[in-house]
Length: 302
Length: 302
Image (cartoon, rainbow over all chains, first blue to last red; front, side, top):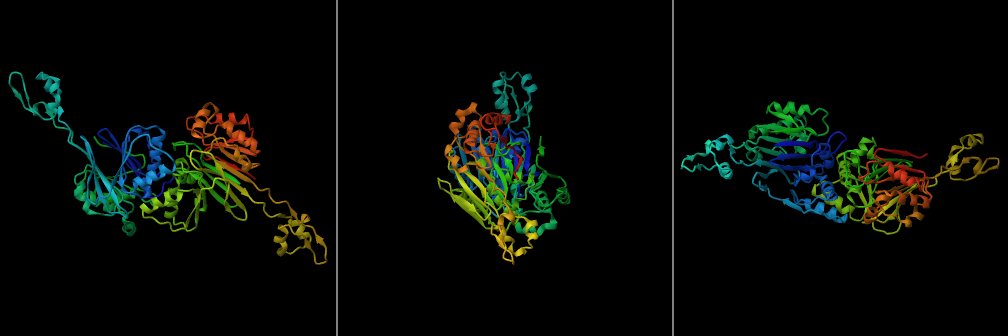
């Protein structure tokens, strides 16, 4: 699992900072999470093969989280993309994108699917044999969802030395990986745990931006390996956080602590702060394993 | 008159090039012409005080000419702009911007006026005592206008030594600048040309992007001091130019020649060309005073 932060600052794009956008690489997927203005340039700067993006998750319809989407969709069009593209986001996202394509008399050569979200409780929005993605309903000024990306428990890992020793034919390998015991030609039953190792522990990533402090998300993100939680303000501006329905670093850390996550990544800093290290300092008083997102920063999890 | 090119490449924004956007500073105005994605960052990079922009002219509704507009409008909102903002562009621009503001539950604290264009012949879209702006109907795949910015003939310039010599009171200065003769107390009539110099020759700038070769614009831009004319392709790709309703460098130069403009600025290069100098070489065979636009380039005209 690998997270590349393309932008993690609130409000307006600037010469040195970008609005929210992330790439989560997980089990051969390249998921794009939010898409502020300039995301396609950030993708290029970070040398990410963005033709591999097939799923885009938009948290909410504030500009700093989606103004780059229509441009990315248009660029895919100009690059003659053929692969389907799926967009998951609040109701309205389809109307906004299609209106602009219609006025420009443009049509995508690829299938563009919108999965509009309206539910107020968590729901599965994407699932395949390896990964499941669920919404995390958040409390912000407009309808907003975070997203929880969970790897599924994979196959058991084949102990290649063991299967060779027993001279087991390769055609049984998948059966073994599925956890089945094997009966040899002489009738001996080899229990599965002699032929396999435990599967890789599945990882999970919870993306929560933007939201006020909201304990109701804790059960949803319980024990997540990694939590990205917004912190637009420091405690010294707690009044502004409350008024604009954002969180402080301390509040983000409190959610991380209550949810018992492995690591907390902070982001969505207000551009009023010149030194983002202050966010980490505030959060670590509550939750020690806190790190700072920054544009271009990569987090890898083995 | 001063032109700052913020972006002058066709199609998609890249790490090193930007889609169309320009700032024309003329008679104390700061006009924004087109607003591709990333324009607000380009304004910051070029250290332009963009709170001074009160008028935005959008040529057409292809993404590379207006996807940055809604972000700029939102940024003005976040910066607590109070001054009116006027947007001139094709019918549809208002619906596109307001739809996005509505879904984000955002309201501008300043007055935002849309002047939607539908006319197929040239019309005056802005006028004050110093400047007039007219549309230049262009031929492209969708409804498109260029814009002609013309300074008006200003007041005559006061010959301060002369008026002092005749001991003329300052309360008559405006009358003199308006071209009137002056009668002294002793009855002597001083003709205006003894008291003034000719006014500064008014300048004009014609912005034409995007368009196929179209001689019908020649009378509209006749004798313009400066013509910016798109050239997406070279003559070697004339078939692509024709198909996509764009121009070649040679065609842009031919328009400049027929219109007898002072200078031709080329731009809107397809990103397929690594060396834009080829555009200048092709155009100068027809129109020698051809220069190349490039992102961040400034042209000043005294």
